[in-house]
Image (cartoon, rainbow, N blue to C red):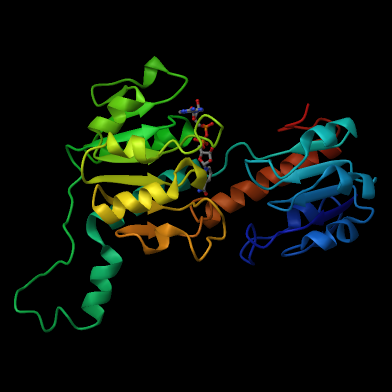
Length: 319
Ligand code: NAD
């Protein structure tokens, strides 16, 4: 089987191995593939592996050997899955691989807001402690989480993991989800409607998927219902937040701080209003990327292709 990997760099910048795929066929790996080279690079390959490179109906028609498209991610919106189904092409995804890493990153953002570790360490290295009048100093309000309330919007795998960590920090959890599991309710964790979450939470963390119903769920009306000084975290999907509304609220001090790993357009655009907003931490979509998570993703992607080659495909998204 001829296997082509069109944008392998973010999954494996050099610290993992493609050997699992190589055991299944003749593999060609490209770090990135511009739109005008997709068809030529696929050529007569039967298996196409992508992360964010779009595979359209036209590409499928131009490359009739394609039998399998494996997406190196959970979201598979880059593939025209209906067109693939019409042409008998199996499309698979990786349903879950990085729950712990994404939950951990939500707390990395939150703890940075609470303590500004990087800033204070830089200040010490710049000599400010050495020359300080007192035995300690800090440049930001330092925040203790115990006793505070975290509102979690989207209480699935990642949201629940974030909730467990929050409770371990002594926080109370209010969760909003369209599906409720009574087994998750405890003295320190219960479900609530969005308005109560907005009104009662000290920290609001987004863990729902991007759907029409969640697009712009954090907007100026929602922010107006929140506590003054709320902290907002988003490492789910950028368009969950109306960015100009959040930037305005940060600059006005209504929202104390935001920790964001995703934005509306990625890579971020230079005119994104959040880049200049007060107390806005932004990381470049790294929640999924610890090596352990990427290795898990690689293992599942290889297992998906092997199952397809064995005639019993798994994790098929276009049955
Ligand atoms: P999941 O499917 O386990 O959980 C999503 C939850 O959201 C479900 O419980 C679902 O019922 C709920 N939901 C659906 N519609 C909703 C709505 N309108 N309002 C509130 N809740 C709603 O998914 P997961 O594994 O927990 O992942 C959550 C999200 O995290 C993904 O959709 C993805 O956007 C994001 N993610 C980001 C990264 C990253 O690197 N930044 C990595 C992985 C996942």
